[in-house]
Amino acid sequence: MSRISVIGNVNVDLLVWPVTELPPPGADSLVESIRMRAAGSAGNTTLALARLGHPPHLVGCVGDDHLGHFILRELAAAGIEGGVAVVPDQPTGISIAFEAPGRDRSFLTAPGSLKVFRASMVPSEVLEQDFVLFCGYFSLPALRGEPTLQLLKRVRAAGGCTFFDCDWDPAGWCRESRQEIAQILPLVDVFLPSEEEVQGLTGIGDPVAAAQALQQISGRRVVAKLGVNGCASFGPGEDYRVPAPSVRVSDTTGAGDAFNGGLLYAMSRGSKWLGALRFATRLAATVVSRPSENRYPTLEELVPLT
Image (cartoon, rainbow, N blue to C red; front, side, top):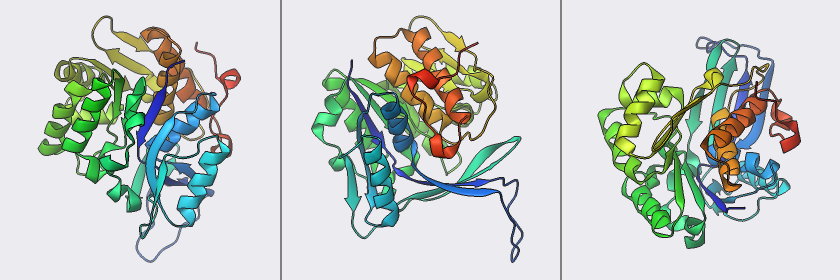
């Protein structure tokens, strides 16, 4: 069983359902539910892996406030202790996710402690694992550019396999952001963008063509997460398309992070690419079909791949 590290954003998610538009100034709207959970890309992936029985080394930070301690309790309950620093005089990061039937979720984020997460907070032993995932890049300003490049180089030097999920660019995929990612990709063994992210990074409307274009920049493997259309993977050797199982969707927030966890889990057990992609797709489909309070499945609870 290979060793896994997850480095990135750990924050609270507030999930508001249903929201198709914000009320006008001075008005109020009623919604069915507002739920809170420990999340962030790194937190979501870690919790998914822990539920599968393979808790990774997690590195991130939270504020020294009630939300930060809430996250630490949730992680500890899942078997994840240590690795998440508590930053004094900083609030814990919060993302508000707006969800509704028939539309993709959208977010408002107050980064808080995410702004001060630095490369110096990443222990050397975490970079010496077999598989190391970097995620939440655009929400971690102190890690952007050269710090991430150096961390990736250290993983490579130690013989590890690098995974990277940049998440959404709040600046709207400006030329500088695209160039920034293009400099990082040659050090990434497996790039894990969403459909919207491959489109934003390339300006290409067809996400499959966009993923192929990114693979030409990377020279390694690009796995585009395509939501209800499963995933498409391009890289050295064979290319793959894996459809998603048909499920009744309950909550899509964090689906891509669960996919990342599923891919890491399968590869840590020696799965080849097609099997690992199928497993990751099953895990993501299962997660979106489950309620927020019982989010992550065990191996026995995964939906079948049709």
